[in-house]
Amino acid sequence: MQSILQLIEEYGLLVVFFNVLIEQAGAPVPAYPILVITGALQDSGSYSGFALVGIAVLAAMIADFGWYLAGRRYGARLISTLCRISLSPDSCIRQTESIYLRWGPSSLMVAKFIPGFASIASVLSGTVGTRKRSFLLFDGIGAAIWSGSAVYLGSLFSTAVDELLNVLVNLGMLGALLLAIALLLFIAKKWWERQRFIKSLCMERVSVQELYDMLQSESRPIVVDVRSPLAQAQGRIPGAIAFRAGDIAPSAMPGEEVIVYCDCPNEASAAIVSKRLMKSGYSRVRPLAGGLDAWLNAGYAVDTDT
Image 1: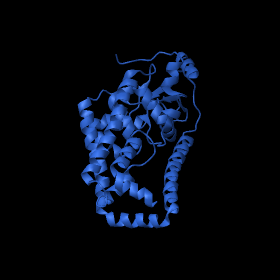
Image 2 (image 1 turned 180 degrees about the horizontal axis):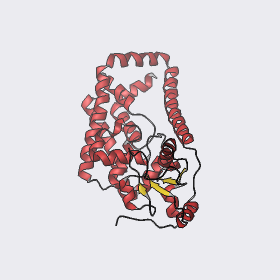
Image 3 (image 1 turned 30 degrees about the horizontal axis):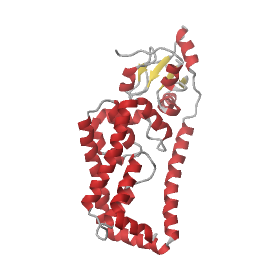
Image 4 (image 1 turned 135 degrees about the vertical axis):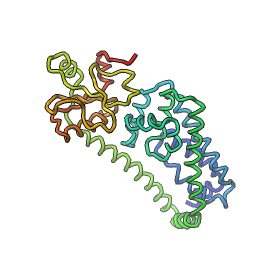
């Protein structure tokens, strides 16, 4: 443990740079605690608080700009992939898009304080065509606020942080082991929350073939699109009605068949809305298995605003 602290004191800037870069690239390795620790050790280290913030901002913007460029090239496909592998259940496409589309690039100033939002927000910036200058400006401000607050907290509570670090040093290998266990518990907690979230979405689905056959019949179901306005403008199932965040229910009789779809992994948004509708008295509600991607992969047509 003592050697780890010596490395931080001597190479604090490099430690912060790579920790922030790795975290902002998407790895579940929190950088905020290291920023707090290096902020507390800046008096005994070979660096200043301003240098810590500067190097953290540089690392964050390198990773974020990479996500921005990837979003411009791969768009919604990349967002879907990120949501599928993310350990944060609250990073579903619909929630992230609603935040960004409501506040625009200015949301990047607080993105790093919202779990599961930072990387996807950078991808969204590229996907929706945010100007490079605006992205870099607001992302830089957000990175400075995020890293600056950590360094400031470290310097403000340097005595308490020093005491905690001394306890870990005195524990030797046990202290390092405790830190490793804490990191593993953090990752395990995120994984467990995601599994519980996925389990909560379990309910009967309708296949795209079933939905297509139903739409060709006389008793057509009510099809509800719960994706963001941006996604809906790019293509939606023919006859689908939009369901905005905050809506109570679609314009359908409670006894009618209602099919809900999205483009989230595990049909997350569709399942959440379906359960909400069932609680409101709509007994015949099912999410579309595979969402719009499955509909398109089956070769069925979509309506667009163009």
